[in-house]
Image (tube, rainbow, N blue to C red; front, side):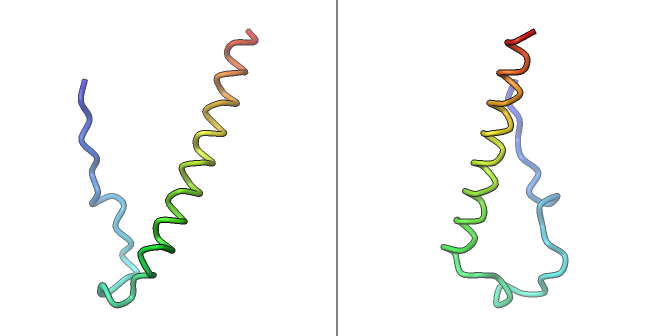
Length: 52
């Protein structure tokens, strides 16, 4: 099954224009941090399920 992301759901309505966006490296760093947190949570869940 292939899933297409719906980026409209990710839009920040508080931003009125592209000029209000943070620098690309700041955006990338924030994304990376969230992905790392998600991976850590998935690893913890995997370990919990394997322990059962």
